[in-house]
Image 1 (tube, rainbow, N blue to C red):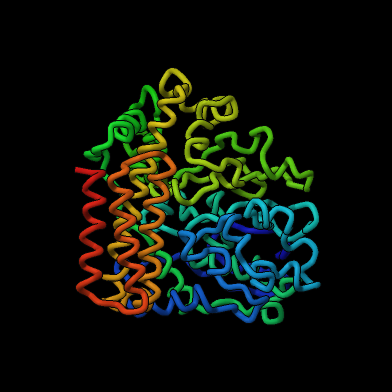
Image 2 (cartoon, one colour):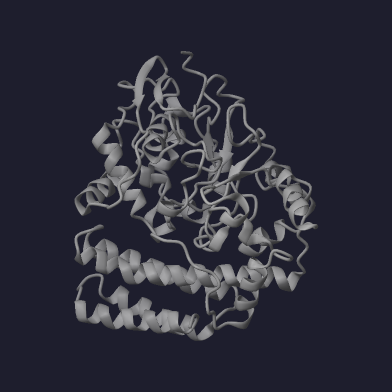
Length: 449
């Protein structure tokens, strides 16, 4: 087999740079998540370099950044951070990353269609979060991982995704020879990484409509669900990543669409004059399609879309009003099914975004409450680590609301809870944590009945 054929969505052995990498991942994820496997997977995710260039999974998927990465966070990193290995390792100085796009826009270079022409055949993509994947990657056509849904060699599963990530991002040289530039994860490591990632974030979808207390967010929810106006629920059923089963069938799961993001004018990366080849999305050659992301976690995991084209959640909602979407195959599909495209006024865009901000904040609060409890049960990390992340989740909940001018009373309560949790990071007391949790619950109650 030609090692330069790129990712293939079949379960088989794949050759990379002449070295056989067994990618036998066609097995369903576990129905229960063993705590010891989660702990082992966490250690691998954040600490294992696989004898490569110093990067780990956590180099790009930062826990304190909702397991994603923003340009602002990148700007805070020291020069010797493994993220910048293309700037410090001469063997990776060309065709591995583009610092001119990584530093200001958080874009990572991906050879999604193979390693045959490194100088010209690549994509520049944002880093997707890894939250809520237990509800968001299954589809009738197989697992959907990565922005295009085929972000892994082999069968596209999370196990294969980990193998592909090591080959793509952990290598010491662009030759990518297994056993020389990295070592491949073994079956146990792939299992542990999978269960850890599946443990992250929420474990079930919402059931809309929610009894929201805010007038603007409640109206945004109505527009989101309405098949005559927002039409969002068709592809983001219950604000998740799956298609509406009454439209696409009960087993559709996560779907791929060509939404026209690639033809948006004046995209930030394009304005630099750097080479940014068109991203052909799903398949090889690509079909121009990208898989549907969950919206519950959206508001605090921007920038948005596969290429970080839009910075704010309001801008992401407004995208669906424009010509790029409404003229796209997905836009035409929606118009054909409903009789019209999407055309929301500015106040309606803000309302839908307010709804997304509120459900994101609610999820942040749930995670902030759950993290210390999971730590007490030995499920996740250490108490100090989980207290830090619990505070970060509460900070995200507050930030998301503040940016939309939403629920000032909840913002005040979240501020109090943040201070209480941060005070515990050096001296954990279960009783004081319970008091902080009670304040978090008050903040949640201020947003939802």
